[in-house]
Length: 153
Image (cartoon, rainbow, N blue to C red; front, side, top):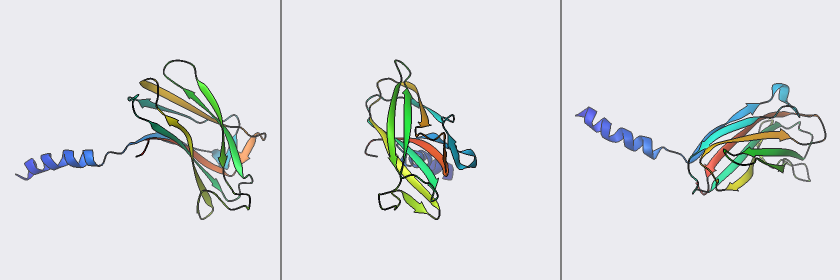
């Protein structure tokens, strides 16, 4: 009898814990340094062209980060058609020097919305991120991650 009850409850638990977040991945920078030659890339399979998605970047840096922002390029390579490369500015600090993101000890975490929209095709999408400042290297950058969520979830 217990087995029958478990077989009934288990699927309910599995479906009730589903998230509308699509895990994609994170990249940790060696020696907390992002060289322009390092271009983290992320791939994901999208199977619904009717949903609106939010594409997020989470950047973590230390409190020794010397800039108030970070410019990046994001290249989106769809399963069909041409790729699209866009430039973004991730704000890190306010004009008064206070941090914009969430501070925990000496780590600042900034969440940045790269794109909101539907995807035109079902299939595998690839996103390549590169830093776009004039310096060859940006120091005090710990890691960068990429997440996709259904809009409004």
